[in-house]
Image (cartoon, rainbow, N blue to C red; front, side, top):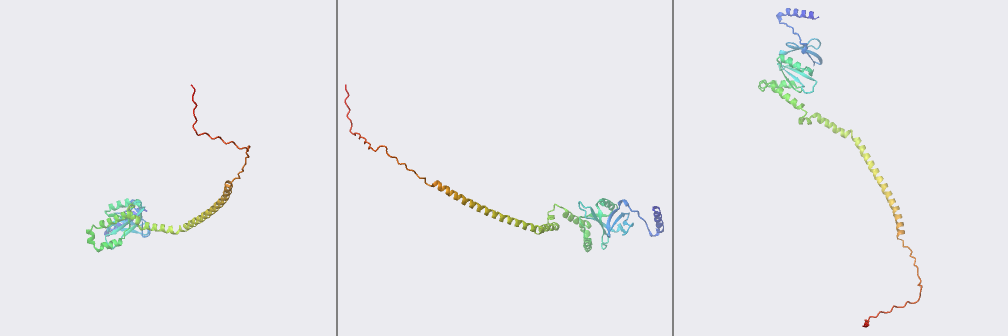
Length: 275
């Protein structure tokens, strides 16, 4: 089959010599898969083209018509990227190949370097229709301002700022604010029933505590009443005056006792001492 195909090529080249017909051999080692026209294709570079003629839909891109290439969605941790070809004719829509595996990135870059094609990297998908429309408004001004380097470098910086997790503006991104709103809504919807149930349980507990306190206070009052009655009886017994039994003692002798003689208050004379 391969030999027959080689014979076919040589025959066509000989017959089309006057028409400058030539055949190019694809570099299979540089091939990569990507999505185009809603199909997954295996694209192979040649000397002047990027093509797929093995299966439908057929794809042929002539490289001398391309002005620049742009790698989109080049951010850390990404598993695939997109490749955009911008044509020299700005009226022609760009050609985008989507979902190329990230492992093929360096191989595609090397191939573009060999083809002397200028390429850029951005962190997001650009709206190329608007970009081309803006360029066409003032092409001389576009060239004086730095051309594609000026436009795509700004886009790359904007993509880096949006992808930087340490930037303060990322805290107020629409995605996060939406998440916060969902969290707030969930706090007021899903948990409302639980909060009401908890409040009812707390009210029941408070009511039961009040009833228990009332019962305890009534028991304490009964105990105090009982204690007060017993204490009163005790105090009555303690403070009740004891009956004093008077014992009358009869005198043993009814005779009047002699009165004691009064002492003399006059000074007594001393008797003379004998010599």
